[in-house]
View (cartoon, rainbow, N blue to C red):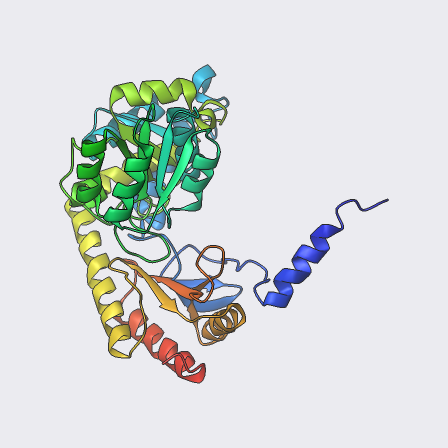
Length: 395
């Protein structure tokens, strides 16, 4: 057989030469603070399971009951016959939780971003305005449109105003930003963005994947964090990180979700969530709205401040992070990969991040602290991070 895709081997060889090719790490246990990964017990500092809800007994119980009542799957896309009552209940609960008129659940956060951006600004007369460090799913959504594209410097409001002036006269102007930036852990200045949007007649969208369950009252996200309810147009959130289950959603006006139900292609052409997933997400909202949820969020932030504080005392460069996302800047692909491997051997799992996810020269280990970690877990991790860092002359 003739191999017409021989170029793939060359691409893989290039990854190996750069030192970043490696098999996926495999979990042999639940996603916990201490996990069995590739057969080794390690402190897990790279999970998005911020509040530890992936293993919460109330969520597991809700999912078991939903399987018994509704079956294993939805069996169709939402617009045909895949919409079950439990999907409607989830969307109503999400809207109430977010303080909006309505919400619409997508199969994943990436689908919510792609589908929403593409549907709302489809024409060449429209304008997409995006922060330069926005998530790949936002970049994909913008690329799927025919709209004019404007990129502003990261969290730079003077740069944003400059591109808004350039976009003036467009049919529709959409400003899109991450709420919490997933690689740096900093927060977008939503109040200033909202002011500029009002000034130039733009509407706003925030990707709150890493703020859901983390920031705002009861983990409601960055719009709540900045008290911008009623002033921000579109909120995207995930159900798979802080909420511990799976999926993405858009929260906003009823007109917005009604429009997306008929125009967002990833929603139209994806089979609905299994009913157990919807039930688990509802249970997660119940927890977030309870005193237990408040306690979990407090524990998350207590752990975050402790971990980051100790690393800063040791002289580590954590960039601009002010959230549980803690980037440890190493620099160099091969060096970062080796640092991560050595750290794993010492009993700590941290994710190596390379270009194009981050700029060349800023390759890093990204740690994420959770509410699951004990002080003993964090002290052990800090000790091993310091040991490996001194060996690699990072500090």
